[in-house]
Length: 274
Ligand SMILES: [Zn+2]
Image (cartoon, rainbow, N blue to C red):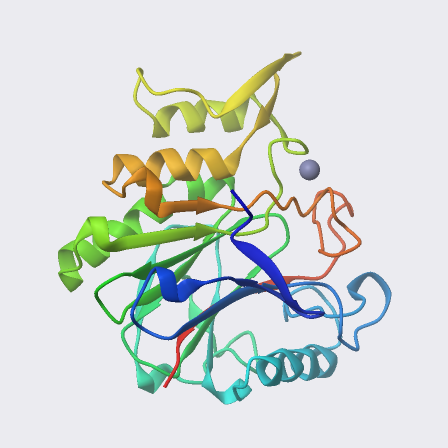
């Protein structure tokens, strides 16, 4: 099957053919490192305000991306992310939060969803897993930030559970798209991480990692998220994974691991068009 993420523009990959999955007009994608004004390790489309880049450049970059998808930056909503699993419902009154300063973002959230059209939900990534949510039957969209911590805390399944319980969305109407992240090919972790991966699964579940000896493992975070989503009731056919690896492709993406921690951030974004 072809990859669900396709290069829509120099500045971003988009999730293609979303009209096959929902009756709403949804725009969703994941930015690249190209088409911005940042310098040095942040060259050029750094979209994170928390990485010691020049704020003015980051805001300029955000404006460029906003315009590339026919929106204004003032429609965007950002969170101040903490590698947790808390999820927030975003309303019109949140419009613009975090778009021009870190402090004005929605504090302590790693998952955002909304039923409002015209709001662009955005979270920042450099290797962590961007997870995008929509429903076939309902005008609801969401995005989550799932590094290994968020993944083992089950943030993706938590978004699904929140929609089912609080928003009366049918679980089999939910489609989940997992975007560019560090993949199993490049993600070596130690026993400390694997113990928590094991704790997030049941004994009979397959393991989304391989042992390499010396207490080192190759972990496939995309597969872990898929397994946890399926355990939450999302049909397997509704979970769509990309093959794009941020660490294998530092010519296109920022990679925290590959670039030893000093690098920029991409944004995962999703909106229901007005
Ligand atoms: Zn890789």
